Amino acid sequence: MMAEQTLRAWAKELGFAKAALCPAAAFERARRLVRLQAPLAERRQLRFEPEKDDPRIRSLAVLLWPYAPSAMTQGEALFVDSYYPASNLAYHAAKELENRLTAAGCFARANVSYPAKEAAVRAGLGRIGRNSLLITPEFGTRVVIILIATDIACEPGETKSNEAVAGCIGCGRCAAACPSGAIDNSGMTHPERCLRNFMMEGNVTPEPLRRKVGMRLLGCDICQRVCPMQPDVPQASPVDLRLEELVTADAAAFSQTVARLGALIGRNATRPQRVRAQAALLAGNSGNAAYLPVLRQWAQSPFEAVREHAIWAMEQIKLAGGGT
Image (tube, rainbow, N blue to C red; front, side):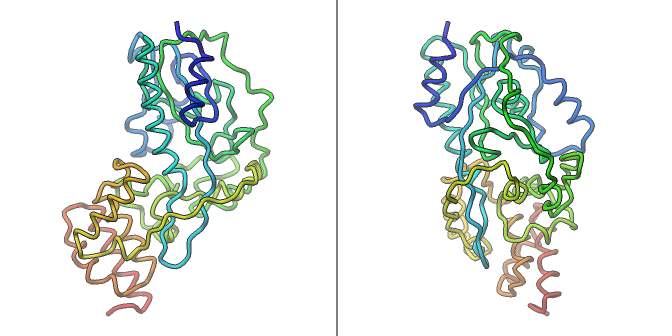
């Protein structure tokens, strides 16, 4: 039977900074929390009972891929949180680890959709902060968490203790900084207000949140920037992408830009109509009347999010004095 030490060694070779196991017990706490909160698109694929999904699953390998904070952008340069390029790299590294485990005779299924943060806590890798993110002692909250379902033995009594791991100090900075009021003194009690949950998800963003998006194409990061639990590390270079490359009537140019972005953050994250819908919001926030001809075209789109966001964007540009 495969040993956890071998799993860790292979994970490190592939770029993961941390690897640990947690037992495949049902995630009842996460299930109850999801039932109590507003439904969100990102939770549609979430599952809670590994052992019932496949009797071969005895544990979940919890893998951490750290990343540096993104440098902020200015003007019409678009913000893409560096979490997403890191997530794409971690996804493919996990698939390679799955291949290695399978070749060694193990059962392994990478990138499974169980509550990743709770699994990381069970594995002793960190604690959950007020902003609902995992806080790790080495990397703060800036880690991609990947789960691999395995048949490697990990009994409930072997669950790693995280008592020595520093947790949230309750300073309240994340709640004060959150632009949409998703976080309060009790934690992330309003995830339906979190800006990230509406970015490139294919859904219409609630109108009160649209101006707050600013020029963020994907990712928010505000609550992480103010968190005192972050290590002091150099910032990552921003993604080289401008709004004019997306809000364009040139279909070929748009497709090339989306393909370039997809190579960086993953094709599943860059579905064209979802990118258009988010770009329309940013066009509205830019106040730039040069985007009005494209927005008029998008306002006739059969895709609801593209259409509604384009109509709103035209109104914002006119209110800003950028059109008639």
